[in-house]
Image (cartoon, rainbow, N blue to C red; front, top):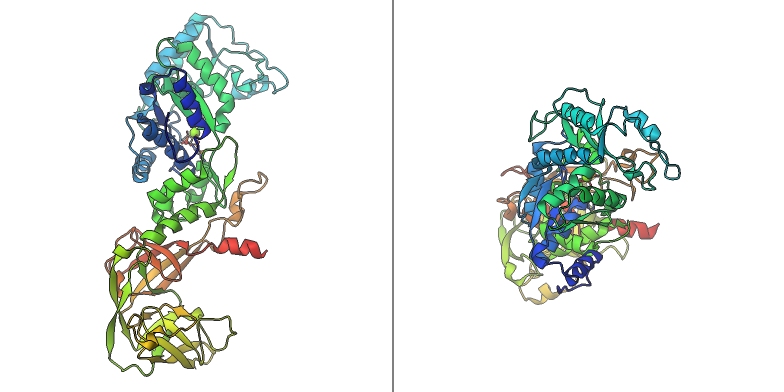
Length: 562
Ligand code: ATP
Ligand code: MG
């Protein structure tokens, strides 16, 4: 019996029951079976965390099995990316395997089924077969080829394999029951002819096995004890079991398929087909665009493996379909970065402040704490001088009592520095503010212990010294879709809901000079603004930052106001 901090989920309960009923714990074995036809996304992370998590809990091996039976859509690029993402998430697979490794074994078993009268070659078109399929309430009709002799079937199947027939002319079907209430049991396809080169087997095969025929048999070959898949495969379980019945020896382990609900996330789409569309139509910059729900996109956005694993654990494994709120994912990265990300100052929309009573040419180094949440994070020094930038929206000429930032005739504290008072503004002809003239209280330095330094002023704002600031590009990302469920309405194209403001690029943001030597993937809190990380495009002298997440959930507040 395993011990967990939380209650066992229903799949763990099934495993516990199996163990209680005599399953040898050494026989436990799991697999994660991606099709290499796209990049992994946050939904796959649920399945990865589930399967590899069970492996850790039960000290059982977990295979990485590429489900590569459709050469039309599969590529080595995807295989490589999938492996990188799983490793990055922090998991280790036992064996790296491919369904295509089993093509010969599957073929041999298919021959066995033909010999037992359990499979036949059908020469009809897919349209003709569809017409005979019936409906859930009306039985289907038998194919005119259903009662072909074993010899004829063996001959045709071999010729299919040898490439003698064109695509679409013949298929191999399991001979089950055209009246079954489960439509999937109505003589499902086992093989189709595809004259396509495969990313691993090249030109060897002219026929390729279908998912249902491949998956359970691959589980059997690998002796997977629990084959966990998403709910849409529930009706496939009967077929999974039927196919296993045909080859099961009776004395080794018989795999068991069990289903759980897919992970859906609000404000995004998760189907690989749709994600591929976004990439191919140039609506995003690639699979790892920081707005994508892919693991590589989240990584580039600044998400960490721990935040994704914690999110997966918190969202849990459900029996029924549901939608997880994007805010939960954001909560987990915010929570982690709050503890780990160094605080720095950056100004994204600068306006110049001149401190008129600060001597021209003087500069001083001020001490700043790196992370108040982490006493071991230490401190750094930041330069202060007569001319600084602050955020344009941190200043107003006149404002009401609730505005605690800088306004004419009033004081504000500069973070880690002095209290300043705004006296005057310089504007251009259009009325735009070019400079704010302030005076500072020289006894008010933060941390100096003086009476003036203890003086309470309502607001604190961030700033950077103009002469010392680094210029950088900052990419502000927002959710990719404006609709909570962009693909729920089948009548509408999900792309209509793309958020036109999902990316705002700031070319001239100013950062404190301590950031000069940052490397891609470094994380920071830009104080009062949010969490940011260094993008892969960043170079020394041409820094690029991504906003991972804002400090607070502004969408939740907007929804509340509605
Ligand atoms: P898509 O429909 O996006 O192409 P898929 O299910 O075909 O996804 P696979 O590569 O076959 O993608 O998935 C590998 C494994 O991950 C499968 O076991 C699948 O059930 C699981 N998986 C895929 N999407 C999700 C999801 N949204 N939530 C949980 N598990 C998922
Ligand atoms: Mg699939």
